[in-house]
Length: 203
Length: 269
Image (cartoon, rainbow over all chains, first blue to last red; front, side):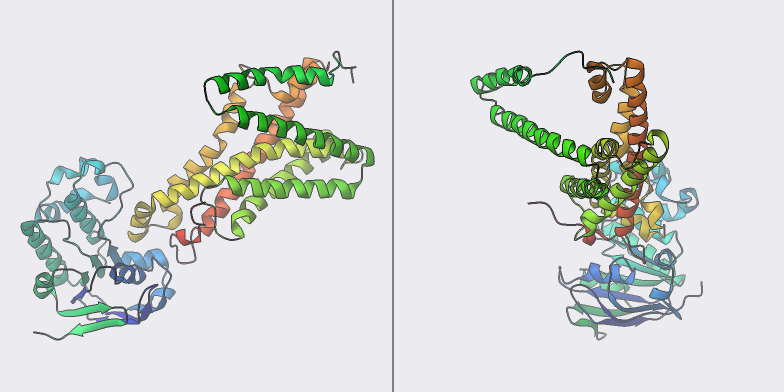
C-alpha cells in the first residue's frame, strides 16, 4: 500500500490546542495524557466529527477540501466504545466471511457474524469495532485506547495484529494510558496537554 | 340550513357539566387529586370557547380581509409556539419554533388556500366563516403531528448518537446513517392520522359531522363535509410533518456531515 504522510497543522478542539504533528507513512505515533485532557476530542477533530479550527492533511489533500464521508473512510477513527446499529455482528461488515484470518488473530471464532450485538462482551465489541475499521483499508487509523477492555493476553494479540497493519503501510495514531504499551508499539511518543502535543524523547 | 331540531339553553350546559361534578366528588372521597385540575380545565374550556364565540361572531359580521388575515396569523403563531412547547428537546434558539412554525404555516396555508379556491369557493374567497374554522381544524392535527415528529427525531438522535456516529466513521453519508430515524419520526408523527382514518365511522363519530347531524343536517351531507375535512387535514398533516422533520434533520448536520447535537436546546427545567 502506498500511503501519503498524515499531517495535522494547529488544530484547536473545544478544550485545547494548538495540536500539530506529522506522521510518516506507516509510522505509529502514541498520544498519552491524563483523563479529561481531550484526547478523544482531538481524535474526533482529526476524523472531522466535531467542529474545530486548524487543518489536517493526508498527503496533499486537506480535510476541508475532501468530501466528509471520503475523509472518514481514509482517516478511520475507532472510538473506545464504538456504536452498533443493526441486530447481528455480520450486518456491520461488508463481507465478514473474507476476514476469517483476522477474526482468528483477534481471538474471535469465525462464526461470530451470526451473534446478536446485544450479547457481545465489551472486549468482543472492542475487537470487532477495530476489525470493522481495518476492513475499510484506510491509510490512517485513529485508535482510542484500542485494548482498554481486554485482558493481558488478548491485548498483546490485538497489539500484534495492529502492528501487522502498520507493517502493511497503515499509519497508526494510538491513544493509550499504558506507558509499557506505548513503549512497545510507538515509533514516536507524544504527551498531549492542554497547550499542545509534546514529543517524548527516545529513552 | 335546517332549523336546529333542539335548542340548547345555558341550563342544558350546566346539566352537561354535572357528570364532571360527580367525578369531582369521587376524586375528593378517594383522594385522587383530580378534582381541581379537571374543574380548572373545564372552566378554561368554557371561558376560551365563550371568547371564541364572540370573536368568531364579530369576524363573520365584519367580513374584513384584514381582520381575517390577522386572525390567521395569530393562529399560526400560537400553533408554532404550542408545538415548540410540546417538544422535549427542540432546536436551540429561534430555529426551535421557526422550523415547526414555517412547516405548519406552509402546509396550513397551502391546504386552506387550495380548499377555499377549489372545493369550497365561498364569496368572497376569504370569507372568515369558512377560512377560520377550517384552519383551526387543520392546525389542531398538524400541531400534534409536527410536535410528535420533531420530538421523536431529536430524542432518537440524542439516544442513538454513538450508533449514528459509528456509521459516519465508517464513511456512510449522514442521510444514510439517519434513514431509520427519519422513517421512525415520520411514522410516529403520522400514526394518529392513520389510526383516525382507519377507525372513523366504525367506532368513532367525528365531532364535526356529529355536531352537524345534531343540528339537523342530513347524514349524507354531514358525512360528505366530514370526508373532505379529514382528507384536507390528513394532507396538511402529512405535508407539515415532512417539512418539519426534514427541516430539523438539516439543522442536525452541517456541511461536514457531522451529527450536531449541540444545536439542540438543553433539557427543559
